[in-house]
Image (cartoon, rainbow, N blue to C red; front, side, top):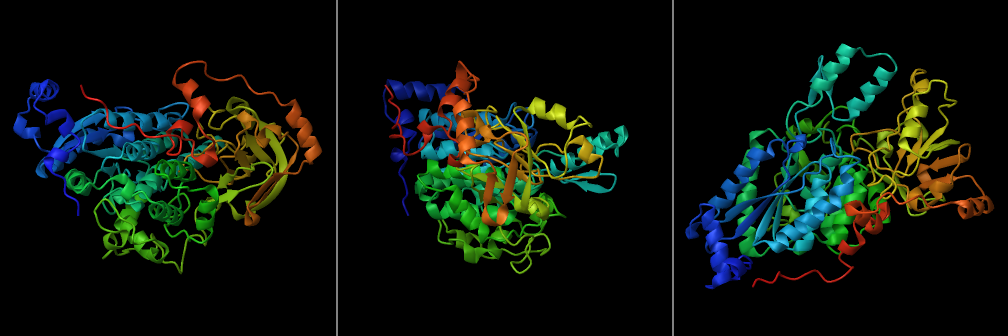
Length: 577
């Protein structure tokens, strides 16, 4: 195994030469109260911390960073905390997805421009995992991902509450007049009881599981609840391990391989993953030069049973229960014959070695292959004249009666227009209608917001209906559920076929054949296309201007075109004069 000498550390370019430039670097560290013995010949470890007072998922990171630094010091490294962009989904509007690529750019440039030999990436809330990982892959230094961990399960009036999923559920009941103000306030206070990410298998737990399966976390780290003392110990373990990785020169290009990305996809399907996994996993893979496509994901989904009985795809359990049942290591052990066990991980060992001894402690939470929650994986990819470049649906999380459905479209061009209509109890709508929202994609949203779980019209809610077919070029929260077709590509804002659909047109979903079509003849569609006019650009300056001109479509991962590995040569080491 490679073992670097101190003179070969990346940080040695800043600190080792006996000249005026290194004198300035060393003196500035002494200005912070460190002696030369604290940092000389030691790996400098950047601890990229996405804590903020508005990111409740990361509320514990202010303390957890100290555990990481403790581990780095114990292993002979020199830790430096680097505050990073905190993109939370709760408060960041219109969506934190607008800023995922900004976090990736910041991460890459922060690593490249500072004397960092390795990094611990502290993330968890939806977009922080892909953003941090994408940037670190491009930067190329050794990395360990520290997942925030799920919060404790919610509770109100003796009922277990799940993030997002139960918010949607009880909101519909409130709209139907079945929940009082007092009950609503109790649910509001009981659904989020501690620091940590959503405790359903939403986007946060999906993405940390993907990082875990990809070999970028310590084995099973993604399952540990945020406030469990094991999470503190894991933080210190991350600090110790990253120092060892620097000496071993264990860089991301050796870990994020085709095998690792496919392992991550299989595990995602088996967990009942968020639909957002598609966009983020494709983007992460492409940063590593791995050509992972929608069709690849659909093929893997067709043969991977969903075995994690965790909401929203499962019915009975939450992430805390998943942890007690054995966590992600136990789930991967159940499907190890479907994984490439030779894939290298940050431990320096293979995935197979990391899974040795993993045990399932509750086979109703983590099901055996003989008794899956759903016979296929979590996601399915659709094609058709409404989505020639693809769309995504979560079959296990919707009523099976919608797996084949035909009905008239009810089309809305904006969220405010849609919201006003669905609250109108006189709206002419039936359970067979197909609600359609457009101009909500990567450019149209802007930023690809989580608007895709369109509310059921109030008129239908009061009749007892709780699901109907909905289509959009938006995303939806991983905690959401229902017959929602998402990520329609190309999006309507750039003239995709969804822009041509009109209210009253018949739409057909045929899940078995992976088709989504509008039953409109080609001559009529050509005429509509000729009459279509591009909307006025949303941005004329700033980051939004860059985003709108360089973001790729949903099927390509929504990364910036100029950040993908095939765009050009990565910048080398910075000049130091």
